[in-house]
Image (cartoon, rainbow, N blue to C red; front, side, top):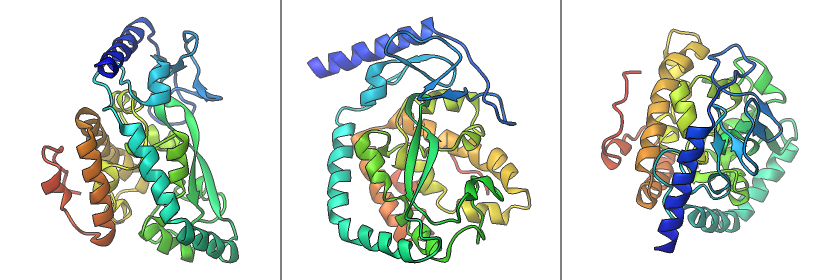
Length: 297
């Protein structure tokens, strides 16, 4: 009862802050001017109350929300125990996978460009920037060449060994460290670079930063074939992402935000493992009822 009461107080406090602090600033890219400019680990443009960060629209995000992920501004609270689940499962996976991960590290060290890890700034919880950790699967500086943050089917920037790692999503496993650090959760919205985040509508941007990004999520499952969707379309990749992929992916992330629970997270984790084995499976349609209807890509 004490925990539930504390969470209610946190939500009420955050809602009050959202009513008191309003504003928005533009991000310095040639995209919809909705994402606030980051400076250090906070979003600039509005003066926050002491101990509080600023989100995409210049609104204060409480310490409870930033540190524990329990509060959702203006809405329901993240279910109790999510952080505990993140720590327990990520720790167990790192222990179980230690030997295979060391093997991959050695393999990357002697192949390709001999770079093991790849660090990249992404948009995270409360609009804060953090460095996501991955195994290096692409050539150096790939995020600034070609289609930048959009990976194409048979993308020439991807290293030969990288194709294997990316197909089984092994390149994402170092993010277990991000989960342990508290930057990410096991399940949530996929963290994006500022440019990719700018493809989301202002409403989606404002809401999804209320929860931590995840290693996997409903968007990751549905769009596991994102590269083939881009390849099949006759439009330029950036336009496909902006007009087709981002709107539906945003709707999926909002659906998760409204329905998040321990049971839903466990189903998403199991579905993630399933679609890695059966890549063309549409099992999620039967397991996750009430999802937004998928457009005809």
